[in-house]
Length: 171
Image (cartoon, rainbow, N blue to C red; front, side, top):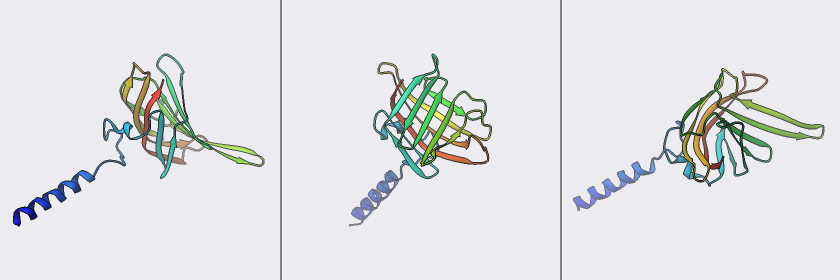
């Protein structure tokens, strides 16, 4: 009986340890295959506590190595601009060539109002984009990102991006 109790106790402890995963990561290097948790050709992130998800992805090459990945929703969009498509970690903010931009559009009778948060040329913005997999055979790129972006017109106002993932986005 004691053997059975000890075995059940060990199984419960093992189950508890295994269920404590890093599903909601705050560190962009939490897991080398984290991008696989979302659909191929999509992007998601938590923006100030609200989930952003899109499978409407447009990728453009600005130059030989500069890639711009834009995920669009009905009234918002998230753009990643990378200076290289190689696997590795890229910092954002300040004078870095890599940056994130989040744009929202509010439609009113008098027209639309666009609000843009960015890390481009902003020294109070910071974060990391990590390219975890570049598939040169299928021309796709996957990775994760986190950062703090500032309002384009007022760098005292910011938005926090956590748990950003892009999976098998064509380039």
